[in-house]
Amino acid sequence: MSDTIQQYKDFVLTGFVKAVQPVVVASAEGCIIHDASGKDYLDCFAGISVVNAGHCNPKVIAAAKAQLDKLIHCASYIYHSPATGELAEKLASIMPSPRLRKSFLANSGAEAVEGAMKAARLYTGKHEIISLHASFHGRTWGTLSITGNQGRKKRGGPYAPGVAFTNAPYVYRSPWPDDPRRCVDFWAQSLEDVIHFSTAGDVAAFIAEPVMGEGGIIVPPLDYFQEIKKVLDRHNILFICDEVQSGFGRTGEMFAIEHYGVEPDVLVTAKGIADGFPLAAFTTRDEIAASFKPGDHLSTFGGNPVSCAASLANIEYMLEEKLCDQALEKGQYLMDRLNRLKRDQPLIGDVRGLGLMVGIELVRNANKTPAAAEAEAIRDLCLAAGVLVGLGGVYGNVVRVQPPLVISKEQLDRAVGAIAHALEQVRTKVAPSTV
Ligand SMILES: Cc1ncc(COP(=O)(O)O)c(C=O)c1O
Image (tube, rainbow, N blue to C red; front, side, top):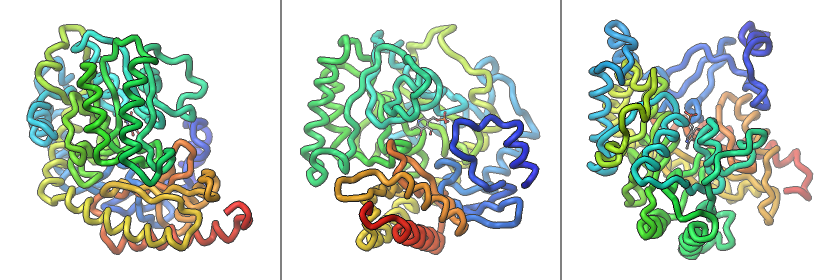
Protein backbone atom coordinates (compact mmCIF):
# COMPACT_ATOMS: atom_id res chain seq x y z
CA MET A 1 0.00 0.00 0.00
CA SER A 2 1.35 3.44 -0.86
CA ASP A 3 2.45 5.76 1.95
CA THR A 4 -0.27 8.22 1.02
CA ILE A 5 -3.07 5.67 1.22
CA GLN A 6 -1.73 4.51 4.60
CA GLN A 7 -1.48 8.12 5.84
CA TYR A 8 -5.07 8.70 4.76
CA LYS A 9 -6.15 5.61 6.70
CA ASP A 10 -4.24 6.67 9.81
CA PHE A 11 -4.51 10.43 9.89
CA VAL A 12 -7.08 11.88 7.46
CA LEU A 13 -10.71 12.06 8.57
CA THR A 14 -12.63 10.49 5.70
CA GLY A 15 -15.53 8.67 7.36
CA PHE A 16 -17.97 10.93 5.49
CA VAL A 17 -17.25 9.25 2.14
CA LYS A 18 -17.86 5.55 1.39
CA ALA A 19 -14.31 5.33 0.13
CA VAL A 20 -11.62 7.66 -1.15
CA GLN A 21 -10.98 6.53 -4.73
CA PRO A 22 -7.82 4.39 -5.04
CA VAL A 23 -5.90 6.96 -7.05
CA VAL A 24 -2.92 8.84 -5.61
CA VAL A 25 -2.75 11.95 -7.73
CA ALA A 26 0.89 12.88 -8.24
CA SER A 27 0.48 15.45 -11.00
CA ALA A 28 -1.87 16.47 -13.78
CA GLU A 29 -2.10 18.55 -16.91
CA GLY A 30 -5.02 19.35 -19.19
CA CYS A 31 -7.41 16.41 -18.84
CA ILE A 32 -4.84 13.85 -17.73
CA ILE A 33 -4.11 12.85 -14.14
CA HIS A 34 -0.91 10.98 -13.39
CA ASP A 35 -1.13 8.47 -10.55
CA ALA A 36 1.87 7.98 -8.26
CA SER A 37 2.13 4.38 -9.51
CA GLY A 38 2.65 5.60 -13.08
CA LYS A 39 -0.88 5.03 -14.38
CA ASP A 40 -2.61 7.82 -16.32
CA TYR A 41 -6.31 8.67 -16.07
CA LEU A 42 -8.54 10.68 -18.36
CA ASP A 43 -10.23 13.06 -15.94
CA CYS A 44 -13.93 13.54 -16.74
CA PHE A 45 -14.84 15.01 -13.37
CA ALA A 46 -12.37 17.92 -13.18
CA GLY A 47 -12.02 17.80 -9.39
CA ILE A 48 -15.83 18.14 -9.03
CA SER A 49 -16.26 20.52 -11.93
CA VAL A 50 -13.43 22.87 -10.96
CA VAL A 51 -10.50 22.82 -13.42
CA ASN A 52 -12.51 24.06 -16.39
CA ALA A 53 -9.41 25.49 -18.10
CA GLY A 54 -7.56 22.21 -17.59
CA HIS A 55 -5.29 20.96 -14.83
CA CYS A 56 -2.23 23.12 -14.21
CA ASN A 57 -3.06 25.54 -17.00
CA PRO A 58 0.30 27.23 -17.78
CA LYS A 59 -1.22 30.75 -17.93
CA VAL A 60 -2.89 30.32 -14.55
CA ILE A 61 0.31 28.92 -13.04
CA ALA A 62 2.41 31.78 -14.42
CA ALA A 63 0.03 34.39 -12.99
CA ALA A 64 -0.08 32.69 -9.59
CA LYS A 65 3.72 32.35 -9.48
CA ALA A 66 4.20 36.02 -10.36
CA GLN A 67 1.81 36.97 -7.56
CA LEU A 68 3.54 34.57 -5.11
CA ASP A 69 6.78 36.47 -5.61
CA LYS A 70 5.06 39.76 -4.72
CA LEU A 71 2.47 39.10 -2.04
CA ILE A 72 0.62 36.09 -0.66
CA HIS A 73 -1.69 37.62 1.91
CA CYS A 74 -2.44 41.02 3.35
CA ALA A 75 -6.10 40.62 4.43
CA SER A 76 -7.83 41.96 1.35
CA TYR A 77 -10.61 43.67 3.32
CA ILE A 78 -8.22 45.46 5.71
CA TYR A 79 -5.83 46.74 3.04
CA HIS A 80 -6.15 47.15 -0.72
CA SER A 81 -4.83 44.24 -2.79
CA PRO A 82 -4.39 45.09 -6.51
CA ALA A 83 -5.18 41.52 -7.64
CA THR A 84 -8.44 41.56 -5.66
CA GLY A 85 -9.55 44.86 -7.17
CA GLU A 86 -8.66 43.75 -10.69
CA LEU A 87 -10.52 40.47 -10.33
CA ALA A 88 -13.64 42.16 -8.98
CA GLU A 89 -13.63 44.49 -12.00
CA LYS A 90 -13.17 41.50 -14.35
CA LEU A 91 -16.02 39.63 -12.68
CA ALA A 92 -18.29 42.64 -13.22
CA SER A 93 -17.38 42.59 -16.92
CA ILE A 94 -18.44 38.95 -17.43
CA MET A 95 -21.63 38.93 -15.35
CA PRO A 96 -24.92 38.24 -17.18
CA SER A 97 -26.01 41.82 -16.43
CA PRO A 98 -24.03 45.08 -16.10
CA ARG A 99 -26.02 45.72 -12.91
CA LEU A 100 -24.21 42.85 -11.17
CA ARG A 101 -21.15 44.92 -10.33
CA LYS A 102 -20.00 44.43 -6.76
CA SER A 103 -18.38 41.21 -5.56
CA PHE A 104 -17.57 39.85 -2.15
CA LEU A 105 -14.68 37.41 -2.51
CA ALA A 106 -14.64 34.37 -0.26
CA ASN A 107 -12.92 30.98 -0.08
CA SER A 108 -15.55 28.34 -0.73
CA GLY A 109 -18.91 27.99 -2.38
CA ALA A 110 -20.61 27.52 0.97
CA GLU A 111 -19.09 30.70 2.38
CA ALA A 112 -20.22 32.65 -0.67
CA VAL A 113 -23.76 31.22 -0.46
CA GLU A 114 -23.89 32.23 3.22
CA GLY A 115 -22.87 35.74 2.23
CA ALA A 116 -25.48 35.86 -0.53
CA MET A 117 -28.22 34.93 1.93
CA LYS A 118 -27.01 37.63 4.30
CA ALA A 119 -27.07 40.18 1.47
CA ALA A 120 -30.66 39.27 0.59
CA ARG A 121 -31.79 39.49 4.21
CA LEU A 122 -30.02 42.80 4.87
CA TYR A 123 -31.36 44.38 1.68
CA THR A 124 -34.96 43.23 1.91
CA GLY A 125 -35.27 43.36 5.70
CA LYS A 126 -37.01 40.01 5.32
CA HIS A 127 -35.74 36.73 6.73
CA GLU A 128 -37.03 33.56 5.09
CA ILE A 129 -35.48 31.63 2.20
CA ILE A 130 -37.14 29.33 -0.33
CA SER A 131 -35.05 26.60 -1.89
CA LEU A 132 -35.59 23.56 -4.12
CA HIS A 133 -35.97 19.87 -3.43
CA ALA A 134 -32.82 18.02 -4.61
CA SER A 135 -30.71 21.16 -4.29
CA PHE A 136 -27.23 21.39 -2.82
CA HIS A 137 -25.67 24.60 -1.53
CA GLY A 138 -22.81 23.52 0.74
CA ARG A 139 -21.83 21.88 4.00
CA THR A 140 -22.05 24.66 6.57
CA TRP A 141 -25.08 24.63 8.85
CA GLY A 142 -26.63 27.58 7.03
CA THR A 143 -26.15 26.10 3.57
CA LEU A 144 -27.30 22.65 4.69
CA SER A 145 -30.42 24.35 6.04
CA ILE A 146 -31.27 25.39 2.47
CA THR A 147 -30.13 22.10 0.89
CA GLY A 148 -33.00 19.90 -0.28
CA ASN A 149 -31.48 16.48 0.17
CA GLN A 150 -31.76 14.28 3.26
CA GLY A 151 -28.70 12.32 2.14
CA ARG A 152 -26.62 15.44 2.81
CA LYS A 153 -28.54 16.71 5.85
CA LYS A 154 -28.87 13.54 7.92
CA ARG A 155 -27.36 13.63 11.41
CA GLY A 156 -26.91 17.42 11.26
CA GLY A 157 -30.32 18.74 12.23
CA PRO A 158 -32.36 20.44 13.39
CA TYR A 159 -31.62 23.12 10.83
CA ALA A 160 -32.30 26.84 10.62
CA PRO A 161 -35.94 27.89 10.80
CA GLY A 162 -37.42 30.08 8.11
CA VAL A 163 -36.62 27.83 5.16
CA ALA A 164 -39.28 26.40 2.84
CA PHE A 165 -38.81 24.05 -0.10
CA THR A 166 -40.57 23.69 -3.41
CA ASN A 167 -40.40 21.09 -6.20
CA ALA A 168 -37.23 20.63 -8.21
CA PRO A 169 -37.55 21.29 -11.96
CA TYR A 170 -36.90 17.59 -12.54
CA VAL A 171 -38.85 16.81 -15.70
CA TYR A 172 -37.77 13.15 -15.88
CA ARG A 173 -39.23 12.38 -12.45
CA SER A 174 -42.23 14.70 -12.71
CA PRO A 175 -45.79 13.51 -13.38
CA TRP A 176 -45.42 14.87 -16.97
CA PRO A 177 -41.99 13.78 -18.27
CA ASP A 178 -43.11 14.40 -21.85
CA ASP A 179 -44.66 17.79 -21.24
CA PRO A 180 -42.11 20.29 -19.84
CA ARG A 181 -44.49 23.20 -20.44
CA ARG A 182 -47.09 21.67 -18.14
CA CYS A 183 -44.35 20.99 -15.59
CA VAL A 184 -43.29 24.64 -15.61
CA ASP A 185 -46.86 25.87 -15.03
CA PHE A 186 -47.20 23.41 -12.17
CA TRP A 187 -43.89 24.44 -10.57
CA ALA A 188 -44.74 28.14 -10.83
CA GLN A 189 -48.06 27.44 -9.11
CA SER A 190 -46.27 25.27 -6.50
CA LEU A 191 -43.99 28.17 -5.68
CA GLU A 192 -47.02 30.42 -5.19
CA ASP A 193 -48.51 27.77 -2.92
CA VAL A 194 -45.32 27.40 -0.89
CA ILE A 195 -45.18 31.16 -0.36
CA HIS A 196 -48.82 31.18 0.78
CA PHE A 197 -48.93 28.00 2.83
CA SER A 198 -45.37 27.31 4.06
CA THR A 199 -43.89 30.72 4.86
CA ALA A 200 -44.75 33.66 7.08
CA GLY A 201 -44.79 35.95 4.02
CA ASP A 202 -41.37 37.19 5.10
CA VAL A 203 -39.33 35.69 2.24
CA ALA A 204 -36.07 37.47 1.41
CA ALA A 205 -34.88 35.20 -1.38
CA PHE A 206 -35.42 32.17 -3.55
CA ILE A 207 -32.18 30.29 -4.22
CA ALA A 208 -31.62 27.87 -7.10
CA GLU A 209 -28.87 26.30 -9.13
CA PRO A 210 -29.63 26.99 -12.82
CA VAL A 211 -28.47 23.43 -13.52
CA MET A 212 -28.61 21.27 -10.41
CA GLY A 213 -25.28 19.51 -10.01
CA GLU A 214 -25.21 17.27 -6.93
CA GLY A 215 -28.94 16.61 -7.35
CA GLY A 216 -28.13 14.74 -10.57
CA ILE A 217 -27.50 17.25 -13.38
CA ILE A 218 -31.11 18.37 -13.45
CA VAL A 219 -31.62 20.82 -16.31
CA PRO A 220 -34.76 22.95 -15.93
CA PRO A 221 -36.85 23.62 -19.07
CA LEU A 222 -35.77 26.81 -20.84
CA ASP A 223 -38.84 28.81 -19.73
CA TYR A 224 -38.62 27.70 -16.08
CA PHE A 225 -36.76 30.66 -14.60
CA GLN A 226 -38.86 33.22 -16.48
CA GLU A 227 -42.05 31.80 -15.00
CA ILE A 228 -40.49 31.50 -11.54
CA LYS A 229 -39.19 35.08 -11.73
CA LYS A 230 -42.74 36.35 -12.38
CA VAL A 231 -43.84 34.78 -9.10
CA LEU A 232 -40.82 36.17 -7.25
CA ASP A 233 -41.41 39.67 -8.59
CA ARG A 234 -45.04 39.59 -7.47
CA HIS A 235 -43.83 38.98 -3.90
CA ASN A 236 -40.67 41.15 -3.95
CA ILE A 237 -38.49 38.11 -3.41
CA LEU A 238 -34.87 38.23 -4.59
CA PHE A 239 -33.41 35.53 -6.81
CA ILE A 240 -30.05 34.13 -5.66
CA CYS A 241 -28.53 32.14 -8.49
CA ASP A 242 -26.07 29.51 -7.25
CA GLU A 243 -23.60 29.11 -10.13
CA VAL A 244 -20.96 27.43 -7.95
CA GLN A 245 -21.02 24.33 -10.13
CA SER A 246 -22.55 25.61 -13.36
CA GLY A 247 -20.47 28.76 -13.80
CA PHE A 248 -17.36 29.64 -15.77
CA GLY A 249 -18.22 28.18 -19.14
CA ARG A 250 -19.30 24.77 -17.88
CA THR A 251 -22.70 24.85 -19.61
CA GLY A 252 -21.63 26.67 -22.78
CA GLU A 253 -22.30 30.17 -21.47
CA MET A 254 -20.11 31.94 -18.94
CA PHE A 255 -23.02 31.47 -16.51
CA ALA A 256 -25.79 28.92 -16.94
CA ILE A 257 -28.55 31.42 -16.14
CA GLU A 258 -27.72 33.13 -19.46
CA HIS A 259 -29.48 30.22 -21.20
CA TYR A 260 -32.66 31.27 -19.40
CA GLY A 261 -32.73 35.01 -20.08
CA VAL A 262 -33.31 35.99 -16.45
CA GLU A 263 -31.29 38.44 -14.37
CA PRO A 264 -30.50 37.22 -10.87
CA ASP A 265 -30.23 39.67 -7.96
CA VAL A 266 -27.23 37.86 -6.50
CA LEU A 267 -24.99 35.42 -8.39
CA VAL A 268 -22.76 33.01 -6.47
CA THR A 269 -19.58 31.50 -7.92
CA ALA A 270 -16.73 29.25 -6.78
CA LYS A 271 -15.23 26.01 -8.22
CA GLY A 272 -14.30 27.01 -11.81
CA ILE A 273 -13.51 30.60 -10.83
CA ALA A 274 -9.76 30.05 -10.42
CA ASP A 275 -9.03 26.70 -12.12
CA GLY A 276 -8.31 24.96 -8.82
CA PHE A 277 -7.19 27.76 -6.51
CA PRO A 278 -9.58 28.16 -3.58
CA LEU A 279 -11.79 31.16 -4.29
CA ALA A 280 -15.48 32.03 -4.39
CA ALA A 281 -17.63 35.11 -4.77
CA PHE A 282 -21.08 36.53 -4.62
CA THR A 283 -21.79 39.38 -6.98
CA THR A 284 -24.71 41.74 -6.74
CA ARG A 285 -26.16 45.14 -7.60
CA ASP A 286 -24.80 48.33 -6.04
CA GLU A 287 -27.93 48.96 -3.99
CA ILE A 288 -27.93 45.45 -2.53
CA ALA A 289 -24.19 45.68 -1.78
CA ALA A 290 -24.86 49.01 -0.06
CA SER A 291 -26.96 47.29 2.59
CA PHE A 292 -23.77 45.99 4.25
CA LYS A 293 -22.69 48.29 7.09
CA PRO A 294 -19.46 48.21 9.15
CA GLY A 295 -19.22 44.99 11.15
CA ASP A 296 -21.69 43.07 9.00
CA HIS A 297 -19.23 40.81 7.15
CA LEU A 298 -15.59 39.87 6.41
CA SER A 299 -13.30 36.93 5.65
CA THR A 300 -9.61 36.70 6.59
CA PHE A 301 -8.53 34.85 3.46
CA GLY A 302 -11.33 36.15 1.23
CA GLY A 303 -9.94 37.81 -1.90
CA ASN A 304 -6.56 36.16 -1.43
CA PRO A 305 -4.16 37.83 -3.90
CA VAL A 306 -2.72 34.56 -5.28
CA SER A 307 -6.16 33.05 -5.89
CA CYS A 308 -7.35 36.33 -7.42
CA ALA A 309 -4.34 36.54 -9.78
CA ALA A 310 -4.94 32.92 -10.80
CA SER A 311 -8.62 33.65 -11.36
CA LEU A 312 -7.88 36.67 -13.56
CA ALA A 313 -5.59 34.59 -15.77
CA ASN A 314 -8.16 31.79 -15.80
CA ILE A 315 -10.94 34.11 -17.00
CA GLU A 316 -8.69 35.69 -19.63
CA TYR A 317 -7.74 32.22 -20.89
CA MET A 318 -11.42 31.23 -21.06
CA LEU A 319 -12.27 34.31 -23.12
CA GLU A 320 -9.24 33.99 -25.44
CA GLU A 321 -9.81 30.31 -26.09
CA LYS A 322 -13.61 30.71 -26.32
CA LEU A 323 -14.08 27.91 -23.81
CA CYS A 324 -17.83 28.59 -23.62
CA ASP A 325 -18.24 27.83 -27.33
CA GLN A 326 -16.02 24.80 -26.93
CA ALA A 327 -18.14 23.52 -24.05
CA LEU A 328 -21.32 23.98 -26.06
CA GLU A 329 -20.02 22.18 -29.13
CA LYS A 330 -18.30 19.34 -27.30
CA GLY A 331 -21.24 18.98 -24.94
CA GLN A 332 -23.58 18.48 -27.90
CA TYR A 333 -21.17 15.93 -29.36
CA LEU A 334 -21.06 14.06 -26.05
CA MET A 335 -24.84 14.15 -25.61
CA ASP A 336 -25.39 12.81 -29.15
CA ARG A 337 -23.06 9.90 -28.47
CA LEU A 338 -24.66 9.14 -25.10
CA ASN A 339 -28.17 9.34 -26.55
CA ARG A 340 -27.13 6.80 -29.17
CA LEU A 341 -25.86 4.59 -26.38
CA LYS A 342 -29.19 4.97 -24.57
CA ARG A 343 -31.03 3.26 -27.45
CA ASP A 344 -29.23 -0.04 -26.76
CA GLN A 345 -28.77 0.23 -23.01
CA PRO A 346 -31.91 -0.30 -20.93
CA LEU A 347 -30.03 0.79 -17.80
CA ILE A 348 -29.93 4.35 -19.13
CA GLY A 349 -33.17 6.07 -18.16
CA ASP A 350 -32.20 9.60 -19.12
CA VAL A 351 -29.32 11.52 -20.65
CA ARG A 352 -29.37 15.22 -19.90
CA GLY A 353 -27.06 18.15 -19.76
CA LEU A 354 -26.07 21.60 -20.88
CA GLY A 355 -22.62 22.08 -22.40
CA LEU A 356 -20.15 19.85 -20.60
CA MET A 357 -22.34 19.40 -17.53
CA VAL A 358 -23.79 16.03 -18.42
CA GLY A 359 -25.58 13.33 -16.42
CA ILE A 360 -26.61 9.77 -17.25
CA GLU A 361 -29.43 8.62 -14.97
CA LEU A 362 -29.48 4.85 -14.51
CA VAL A 363 -32.70 2.97 -13.74
CA ARG A 364 -33.56 -0.70 -13.24
CA ASN A 365 -36.93 -0.80 -14.95
CA ALA A 366 -39.73 1.14 -16.59
CA ASN A 367 -40.80 2.35 -13.14
CA LYS A 368 -37.49 4.25 -12.98
CA THR A 369 -36.23 2.41 -9.90
CA PRO A 370 -32.88 4.10 -9.28
CA ALA A 371 -29.89 1.91 -10.15
CA ALA A 372 -27.44 3.27 -7.57
CA ALA A 373 -25.29 0.16 -7.12
CA GLU A 374 -25.00 -0.08 -10.89
CA ALA A 375 -23.91 3.57 -11.13
CA GLU A 376 -21.24 2.93 -8.54
CA ALA A 377 -20.07 -0.16 -10.41
CA ILE A 378 -19.84 1.86 -13.63
CA ARG A 379 -17.80 4.56 -11.90
CA ASP A 380 -15.42 1.84 -10.59
CA LEU A 381 -15.15 0.02 -13.93
CA CYS A 382 -14.41 3.29 -15.72
CA LEU A 383 -11.70 4.04 -13.16
CA ALA A 384 -10.15 0.60 -13.76
CA ALA A 385 -10.20 1.44 -17.48
CA GLY A 386 -8.41 4.73 -16.81
CA VAL A 387 -11.37 7.11 -17.04
CA LEU A 388 -12.60 9.15 -14.04
CA VAL A 389 -16.30 10.01 -13.91
CA GLY A 390 -18.40 11.35 -11.03
CA LEU A 391 -21.53 10.13 -9.27
CA GLY A 392 -24.48 12.13 -8.06
CA GLY A 393 -28.22 12.43 -7.89
CA VAL A 394 -30.51 12.36 -4.89
CA TYR A 395 -30.74 8.59 -5.40
CA GLY A 396 -27.02 8.17 -6.18
CA ASN A 397 -27.83 6.80 -9.63
CA VAL A 398 -26.48 9.51 -11.93
CA VAL A 399 -23.10 9.14 -13.64
CA ARG A 400 -21.67 12.62 -14.08
CA VAL A 401 -19.44 13.66 -16.96
CA GLN A 402 -18.00 17.11 -16.22
CA PRO A 403 -14.52 17.15 -17.74
CA PRO A 404 -12.18 20.11 -18.14
CA LEU A 405 -13.60 22.17 -21.02
CA VAL A 406 -10.33 21.72 -22.93
CA ILE A 407 -11.06 18.02 -23.45
CA SER A 408 -10.74 16.85 -27.07
CA LYS A 409 -13.38 14.94 -29.04
CA GLU A 410 -11.00 11.96 -29.17
CA GLN A 411 -10.83 12.01 -25.39
CA LEU A 412 -14.63 12.24 -25.20
CA ASP A 413 -14.83 9.21 -27.52
CA ARG A 414 -12.56 7.35 -25.13
CA ALA A 415 -14.75 8.31 -22.17
CA VAL A 416 -17.94 7.20 -23.95
CA GLY A 417 -16.22 3.95 -24.93
CA ALA A 418 -15.31 3.26 -21.30
CA ILE A 419 -18.85 4.07 -20.12
CA ALA A 420 -20.38 1.86 -22.85
CA HIS A 421 -18.10 -1.03 -21.92
CA ALA A 422 -18.84 -0.60 -18.21
CA LEU A 423 -22.60 -0.49 -18.89
CA GLU A 424 -22.38 -3.71 -20.84
CA GLN A 425 -20.41 -5.42 -18.07
CA VAL A 426 -22.86 -4.27 -15.41
CA ARG A 427 -25.92 -5.18 -17.46
CA THR A 428 -24.77 -8.73 -18.10
CA LYS A 429 -23.96 -9.23 -14.41
CA VAL A 430 -27.33 -8.03 -13.12
CA ALA A 431 -30.20 -10.55 -13.01
CA PRO A 432 -32.47 -9.98 -16.06
CA SER A 433 -35.54 -9.44 -13.87
CA THR A 434 -34.00 -6.31 -12.31
CA VAL A 435 -33.05 -4.66 -15.58
C1 LIG B 1 -24.27 24.36 -6.40
C2 LIG B 1 -23.27 24.31 -5.28
N1 LIG B 1 -23.31 25.25 -4.33
C3 LIG B 1 -22.43 25.27 -3.32
C4 LIG B 1 -21.47 24.28 -3.20
C5 LIG B 1 -20.52 24.31 -2.06
O1 LIG B 1 -19.25 24.68 -2.52
P1 LIG B 1 -17.95 24.38 -1.63
O2 LIG B 1 -17.74 22.90 -1.59
O3 LIG B 1 -16.84 25.11 -2.37
O4 LIG B 1 -18.22 24.97 -0.29
C6 LIG B 1 -21.39 23.27 -4.17
C7 LIG B 1 -20.40 22.20 -4.08
O5 LIG B 1 -20.47 21.17 -4.70
C8 LIG B 1 -22.32 23.28 -5.23
O6 LIG B 1 -22.31 22.34 -6.19
